[in-house]
Image (cartoon, rainbow, N blue to C red):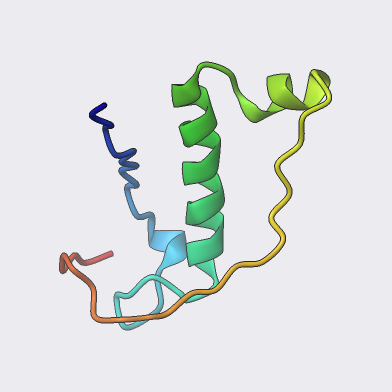
Length: 75
């Protein structure tokens, strides 16, 4: 069975950037949370609908490794 990988595209805003034109490190968690919401919408229901049905998906742990960006953009 072939599966399709979920992909989330995010347009970086000026407010998310440092003076050096990089995304401020703490904003990555906000972007990941937005992607998580879109992932559940792609599955067929937003997180709120799952929650109303008594199903929750708490984030228990999150680890982030900062590496060189794959795509260079300016803010």
